[in-house]
Length: 410
Length: 167
Image 1: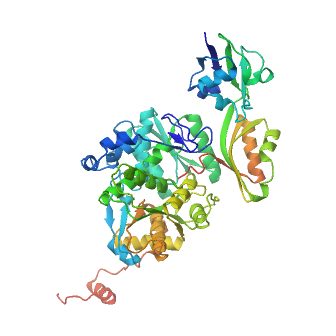
Image 2: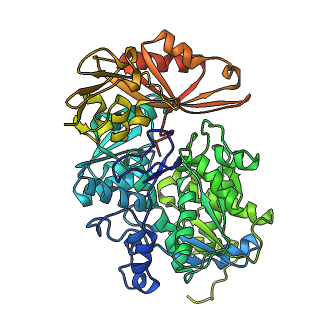
Image 3: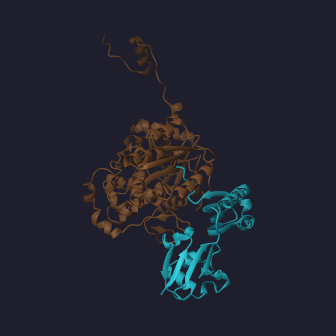
């Protein structure tokens, strides 16, 4: 692994440089990878994220995490028409396996790596998707598991983790305190905390989201991609995925512009990009998009750098725009996404309207989670439901009101 | 016969988890360089960092002898200890973020004076608008806790080096 300041570290459960406090990045022997990771080889492998295993930080083909990834990339004609765009795609991790979010990818790598390092307990601090993914995959992999959550989380969020029968700990107190406590626990108990000491490996799992897009586009890079930003890691890894495939000659460099999406109620990264600043000011989140409400994003600096370097932009969406975005994607493409997906759709609309994504340049919209997990966000915005008595004349009246004519048969 | 180097339990990370190794050299500095730990022990100016104490054959702190130029000979034992002895020692890596009003105040110095902690700045970026400092705080767990409370009470945002980890 390598630090920002250039120092090298052996492969070990470590996530920051002891010297500069910068984050560590996994590096690869690309010459060796080029020999075995070819389009033909990838195409012949099983349909999950491990088909790119040479570019994932595992030493062996993992025994766990089978079936994770390789979610659909669809050509979204209807959504494109609604947004006035001619070449729009949706990458749909709302149907990822096993827990319906892109976190299944990062957790698959984190659990595999934790086992390689010899850990018997995995842990994380979460507000939802990450906990779902880790609890499920820890069970499959047979490791012990602790999930930490803010104590005041909604019931619905807890169910999707607690159902797996792992240790779920609610922590009372303010958000900063929860953060500090979890880092102390990570230190003291020596567990594989997927987003602390295993973080460099965990984060690499996100690259598979990018690799799949490139393969599914027919080994081509899109001109634009819109990515939601929470901690800011995914957007940097999508960029890394494109650069790695280009370096290996698997796709042609297409100057892909990488755009970031945040909620207006938690927009430290997009605010910095729009103000032309390299550092961001942390915020106290206030948005319905809880899954991406990270006020002091660990990879914020790197996300800003990625957006700037690739010629992308960042925008944010209000709660109303988020709900409208969820509805639009559902009504046009039949995909029910969570609030983070509503953010991405709403921001894509803005970027098209602003002309930053020209109407004829290919764009991929990144959908990272499933709407069934955040139903409370859209309940107030659902279409009217009709209730009638069990009589045909009642239905006839309704049908007539809606403009449907009966065929006049008995 | 080379020089033996021993480290305290808290510092075994310096030697990849080992507590004792051997190395060649004619001064303490030579030995540190031979082990590749010289940058860990010293700051950029070559001065021994405050939070380490180094002794030769259990003698006086080398700071009072020749510092890194203190001579060693074959068979000597160099001991490296954490400067904060005993207690439940704790090291916390933190990002401090100073709001505009506090940018001019020497808070790290104040912390070092008020509490029995060692402050080690690893990165800093200070402008008129905001100050961001990567700080390692070590000392007795209770003192470290008090130091963090003091900083937070003064209006500094004190976050673990991982920033927000609840995701």
